[in-house]
Image 1 (cartoon, rainbow, N blue to C red):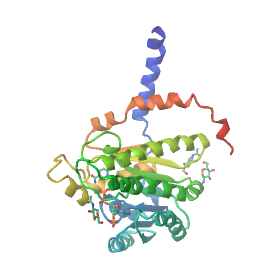
Image 2 (image 1 turned 90 degrees about the vertical axis):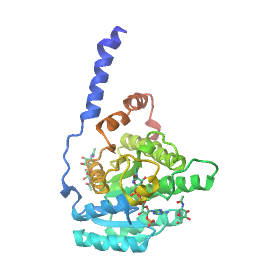
Image 3 (image 1 turned 135 degrees about the horizontal axis):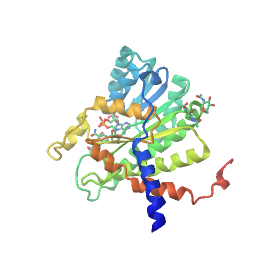
Image 4 (image 1 turned 180 degrees about the vertical axis):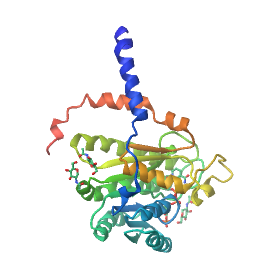
Length: 292
Ligand SMILES: NC(=O)c1ccc[n+]([C@@H]2O[C@H](COP(=O)([O-])OP(=O)(O)OC[C@H]3O[C@@H](n4cnc5c(N)ncnc54)[C@H](OP(=O)(O)O)[C@@H]3O)[C@@H](O)[C@H]2O)c1
Ligand SMILES: *[C@@H]1O[C@H](CO)[C@@H](O)[C@H](O)[C@H]1NC(C)=O
Ligand SMILES: *[C@@H]1O[C@H](CO)[C@@H](O)[C@H](O)[C@H]1NC(C)=O
Ligand SMILES: *[C@@H]1O[C@H](CO)[C@@H](O)[C@H](O)[C@H]1NC(C)=O
């Protein structure tokens, strides 16, 4: 107990202080100039706003979603805003062969890849879960499994560029809410998967950053329609949200939070998890996996 008081508590305090206040480097829009970026789910909502910000910063862009008309408009607006180049490839992430081929096509259009922004989600409404197993499957396939497949396809290019992956998640991927069980499952899965491979990359010295983006309610048309008459909390602006995602990803932060208050961000960071993950890493022997 004396040991605890003397050493462990101060060490934990330092650890937490570092953990909560270690955002030092500053973002500059030039960081994105000439960078080759993929944005999925970019025909509307937050994805479209991210494409517009990236265009203003002078990035090369390939955007995707299902709606060809939506994407065409986004591409021409991006060119007006100053994108170094802008293309679209339309298709559905429900089709696994599209998902697998998309990244290679996008990489060819831009001649490489620096940033992969995974943002698309399948449509679902707020409703109590009864027996809709196909909806759970669609959420897991589109919101989770396609993110894994896109990452696998992009990794060789991202390794070459010391690139970055943004994984767009939600408060519903960190804490439980009613009425969105299939969506929530897919967002929790993203945290489990991408937080796990982030640790592997750090051990194997793979210099590809993964930024899990935890968003509160954002005022996109889809979200406003879905929550209408059910949730009445404040919805934050999609333009600012999109910019914060780009900043956090360019700064290679492990997680970024765009939530409704300082206290929400403070509480959702879950220091218990951080400490336990840090301690558990020391119990592994990785020799077997390194250099092969
Ligand atoms: N808005 C919020 O309140 C909120 C809160 C927390 C987290 N988020 C997260 O932020 C991200 C963006 O949300 P948002 O509100 O901007 O959504 P949104 O406006 O509905 O946009 C979703 C995008 O995904 C595309 N999409 C839908 N089904 C697809 C499919 N089967 N295959 C490929 N693309 C498909 C849509 O285009 P098409 O229909 O043309 O395919 C659209 O471009 C999501 O990851 C979401 O979970 C949002
Ligand atoms: C999702 O969109 C499809 C058509 O694209 C529609 O048939 C389905 O009802 C929608 N599902 C929900 C839950 O909104
Ligand atoms: C990637 O990072 C390594 C180590 O910092 C560096 O040697 C290399 O030049 C970088 N490559 C690119 C393309 O930035
Ligand atoms: C990883 O890549 C980034 C971006 O190129 C670079 O700033 C950083 O120094 C690299 N880190 C390591 C450990 O090589």
